[in-house]
Length: 80
Image 1 (tube, helix red, strand yellow):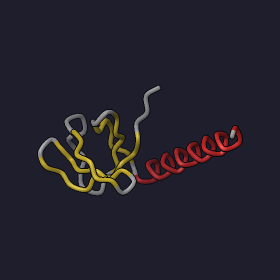
Image 2: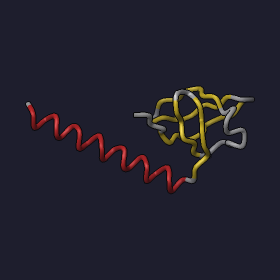
Image 3: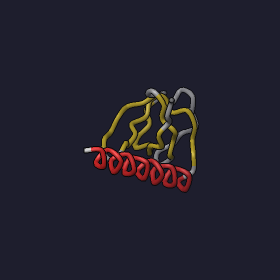
Image 4: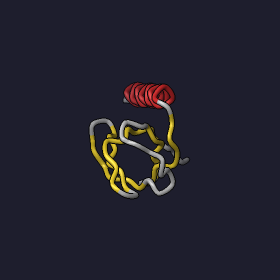
């Protein structure tokens, strides 16, 4: 299964952007999203920003991902 994760653009330089992934900064390609600007949220997949999304969609997706991780952790804890 492939997964794209919402990240926030911190800086832009040419075809690259620095993004914030849960407090970790990474350089990614914005070749596919040349309209991405500082403060925007983009969907990140394999090092490429593939789509610009709005803040509400990004926050909801991050909330759901966090919930899924918590459920997985709880299920694993129940197996021990």
